[in-house]
Amino acid sequence: MKEGKERIRKGKERKDKRRKGRKEKKGRRKRKERERRKEERKLMKEIRKERRTRKERNDGRRKDRKERKEKQGRRKEKGKEKGEEQTTLNRAETGGSIQLKPIHLAQHKIQSAAGPLDMRLTQVPKMLFSAEKRMGTLSVLHIIQDILLQKADMAMRKYGIHVVVANELATYKEEVIIVTKGGRTTVRRHNKETDLEEQLTYLLVEMHSEYIEQAGA
Image (cartoon, rainbow, N blue to C red; front, side, top):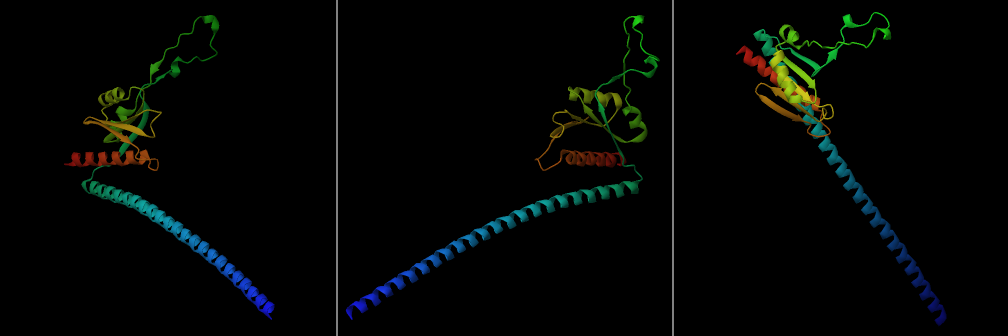
């Protein structure tokens, strides 16, 4: 009788122990599941925040572009009302080049028996002066040369142009210098996401619009 009660008690203890173990295991799984869901919610929150930030940044850029277009449109309409021409002439030329004129080219194979070769090179004529006089009101020279600023000043005096965009080949995507009679302005790319050409175009359009307004005043 006594032994039977002891077996029943031990059996009950084993069942309680197994039940307790299952309960603890289930509790650990629930805790892990809660932690996992918490991490997922945190991650989704960061993703949504990043999307909002990116969306706000893109919206800001679209808004700026829209405002610039509207501003340019208003100035264009204003210029049409005044009967003014709003055209910029942009040419890209090197600081100095030489050429061999066609009249100096040999008609046939060069004969070595004639002695040493005598070659005459001449400067390449620039179209800036005539183009500025005939086609545009605000002229821009894009010059690529080692001695940038000296060439820029010389081009403004020689050709009568209004703006020179000077840059070096190695850094033309990062920095350019806008040279005018009033001074020099360095334009640098803000960050890797922006385009220097877009900034430069916007500044030149602004300068052109100011020139048109001053000419009509």
